[in-house]
Amino acid sequence: MRIDILTLFPNMMSMFFEESILSRAQKKGLVEIVFHNLHDYSLSRYGSVDDYPYGGSAGMVMAIEPLANCIEALQAEREYDDIIYTAPDGEMFSQPMANSLSLKKNIMVLCGHYKGVDERLREHFITREISIGDYVLTGGELAAAVICDAVIRLIPGVIGDEQSALEDSFQDGLVAPPEYTRPPDFRGWKVPEVLLSGNHAKIAQWRYEQAVERTKQRRPNLLI
Image (cartoon, rainbow, N blue to C red; front, side, top):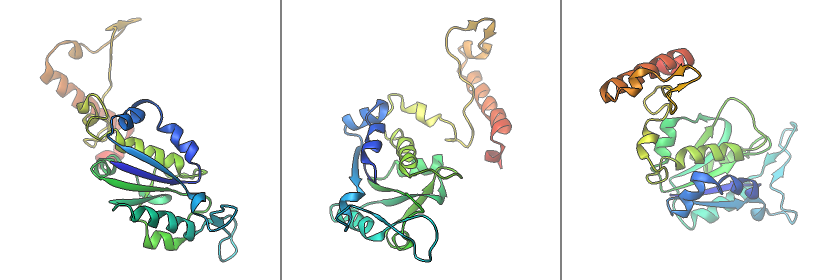
């Protein structure tokens, strides 16, 4: 998979992908992350990519020309399955969406800023708009990093134990059950006996029941 990230702050973005699992995924050749500085596509000698909004409201808007220039330059090199825009009013990001995106070959992610982008860009270039929550960030870089992290970890070979990703919260519509590790008794706080029994059928049933109960308590909206 190749992910092209369009951003005003490529240095800030690159740091996130230089550690841990995401770094190893790139070194293994499982994913290629390429950052594009939108200032490089500006028509202004100062490299500006924003302008005042028509109509006189407060704030600035990302101009269509530099963004379109960048997108079209990339499209001339390869075909993209999706061109994603991180926007507060976009579709709420979810595990099923991450699953779907992990099957793509080439995706592009545009990090929003200011009051957003010129609406014409959204109408003619963007194929998918994604939000990571009902709140506003100073920029779309964090949202893009969240999306990429959730997607990349699902690519076969990225995580050593691929079964682990399939058992994550939300994969089956439930949150994950509680987990325990050694020691079996810490300050009198004991691991449930069923997990020490070696009976895999009973353990699987216990985990399912715990996941259902935890979902009822913490995320009942998932059961609707």
